[in-house]
Image 1 (cartoon, rainbow, N blue to C red):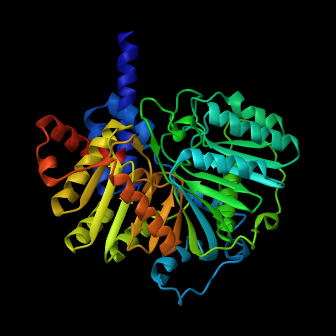
Image 2 (cartoon, helix red, strand yellow; image 1 turned 180 degrees about the vertical axis):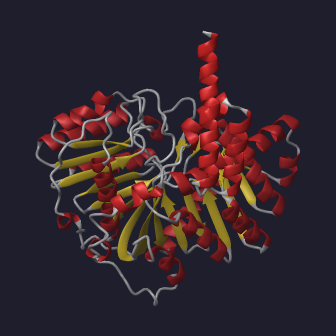
Amino acid sequence: MDNILTLAISLIYILNLFFIITIIFFERRKNSSTLIWITILSFTHIIGFILYIFFGLNLKKRRFTKKYYKKFIFNRKYFTKDAILDTTFHPQNNLIQLFNVKNHSYLRTKNHVKVYTDGKKLFNDLKESLESAKKYIHMEYFIFENDKIGTEIMDILVKKSKAGIEVKLLYDGMGCIKIPSKFYKQLEDAGGEVLNFFPPFFSRFGLRANYRTHRKVVLVDGEFGFLGGMNIGDEYLGDNKKIGYWRDTHIRIKGSAIISLQKEFFINLDFMRDNKTFFSKKKNYEKENIDDYLHFNKSSSGESDIQIVSSGPDYEEPYIKNGIFKMITKAEKSIYIQTPYLIPDTGVLEALKIATMSGVEVNIMIPNKPDHIFVYWATLSYIGDLVTLGAKCYTYNNGFMHSKVLIIDDEICTIGSTNMDIRSFLLNFEINAFIYDSKVAIELKEAFIKDIEDSTLITKTIYEKRGPLIKIRESVSRLLSPIM
């Protein structure tokens, strides 16, 4: 028994050394992340090995990038159909061009945007839209629960699929790891296509914490496109007794931006079709004529100019993070941020600091209740940096703040699945709408101001009074934040 234990420990030492060599010579991580992983693997051995297996394994971007675009990249019409290609006339041309270059996120005009800050209103409209489907329903979710609201929506999908409507569902393997597979299989049995995005190696023991699809997207007939922060589950209705009211932000789009959403959905769908593992059966799918889906209801026009921007391992650059950085640096009057987690990289943090010191009114709102304790303490440490410089930072007390919104100068806003943290910036598959419409920006700002009524302002005095134990928790969590 002792010999087996010694052999196992020796093997872990060898693997840790292999991981360290790989990190130093073959992976191009940020210096802070590299040094933290080397330290953990060198001095904690078994614990470090376990942590690295769960959170450190770094897949090559090339595995994602070229396969993702094999169908799309050679046919430019899939990116440019009904898009505005020359945006030199637009007052936000510099930001627009940031996404145009390689992200193929072209500007689309005359969209109508409906904002949801309450789950009940969102799910009422979502169910109504699904019921109205006559051609197809496409959905991609990080979490799709088998609770009351999840069952109601699944029942609609099953019914529609049996009626001959095309239904495709892409759900995340880790986000839905606790959900029995038979819950999704009922849709497959009804004729729908169901894919588990990047499933864990074992059904209840996940070894793939990174590279998750964190998106929440619904497309119906080219009529409606939904995206934002709300997954499918009862807690998003505010029915969670532990957390209380769930404060989130979601949008429904009607207009040409739906084409961009549709393109991103098919890219992820095709990727998972081609990357089935031996833990799940690979099936032969009938290839769609993408032209049949590149349409929208032109009578549903509005006033919002929109770019749908995706980010993740499928891109060489973190485009959503770059867009957020660009928005912060171009702000002249005000910045409003709502996020459940504030763990920015050095660039975004410095941009927020410089904006604050330059006289820009910086307002940030985070939850008062943590759902990931280490992430929460790290968030508070970064909040402290900004409060010290004069930013207005609030903790939301009426439940859980899960909204992911950035508004600058009452002119531009971004809404989507992206948290203000390194995991969303670099590791997960995310999607955001960058909206150039003062009406939508002001509506979101007014929602922020209303939330202040249920929030506590973290003043410099309050922050400096925190006890030594809290300071230790913040310091340790901040140190580990680049690898969380």
